[in-house]
Every structure is written in structure tokens, then in C-alpha cells.
Amino acid sequence: MDVSRVNVKRAPCALCTTKNKRCPKKCDFAPYFPAERKGEYENAHKLFGTSNIIKMMRFASKDKQRDMLASSILMEGDAWKKDPARGGFGMIQKLKWQIELRKIYLNELKEKIKVEKEKTELRL
Image (cartoon, rainbow, N blue to C red; front, side, top):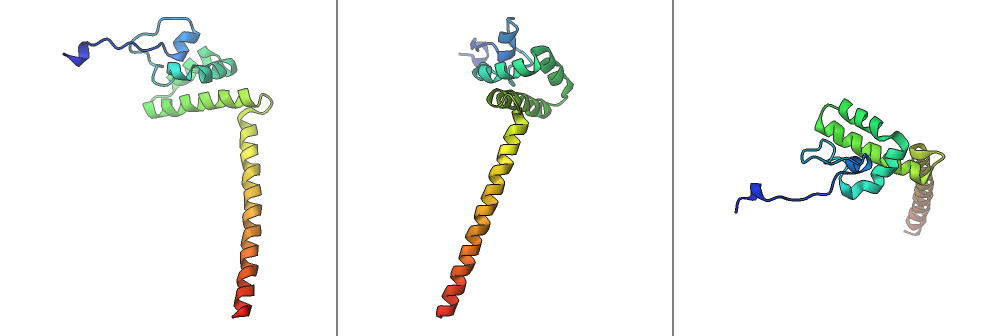
């Protein structure tokens, strides 16, 4: 059986689904916005709009750039869904705050280790 002749059906990509159009077999956007990521795409669609997403994707020239851009678009859409007031900036601020707290905790642990080492050295 020739594998190239087997018709494999795939769900239309999230972008084509949102535009209510038929997704061609060689859809430019299917690799970046597959049907499995429809929820994420809908968040991005609400934030940017499909026409702007298409413009941004066409502006990226290389596949790697498009891949990173699509990932960024989807992440930004999710960020705004989770935090409508601050979006991605809010997520970054939260992560920075967590890093600072961990640094403080690490410094406290280092200080405790130092004190314990000094106690141990005095006993010897």
C-alpha cells in the first residue's frame, strides 16, 4: 500500500476555524495554530484579532521566527486571559517577585549554614 495515497484527515487549524473558512491541506498556519490549541488561539484572537495575527505571521520570514512568534502570540493571549489588567507584564512581575523571595530565602539558608559551620569548627 502506497503511504502517499492514504488520505489522512486532520482537523482544521484554529485560525481557519475562527475565520469560518475551509482549511486547505497546505494551510500556512496549521503548523503554528493546530486544532488542539484552539482555546489558546481564541484568547489570542480576542487580544490581537485574526487579521493582525495573519499580518504578524506573514511579516516573519523564517519558519523558526514564525514558530517563536506563534508561541509568543498564544502565550500573550493566555496571559491576558489570566490577568486582564496586566497581562504578560503581570506574569513577569509575579515571577520577579518570586525570584526575589527565593533569593532572600537562599541567603537566609546560607547564613544558617555559615553559623552551623562556625559552631562545628569551634567544637573541634
